[in-house]
Image (tube, rainbow, N blue to C red):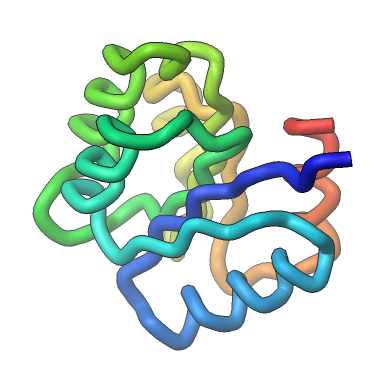
Length: 121
């Protein structure tokens, strides 16, 4: 069985590294990027991942603009997006952005992995 691809967009290198390693341990293929502009550039030239896991606040491109651009790409409407935020009250905003879910920082890994598994399996 081919492993599922997760694009991880996180500008904090330590968080990006730790999450990437945890996801790889769970047999996911991880595409780590540090901001929305690099992610859009990647998506324009590669196959859409099975899931986009992204920090809500990133440099160079707002979450709203990023998601809007993703939704305009081929298969972009079907690609689930999970938001990660240091704010606890992002549920309504995540819904407005048509994200498939959100998790607040700091978070336990198990609920995040469960959310990912339910979203792409």
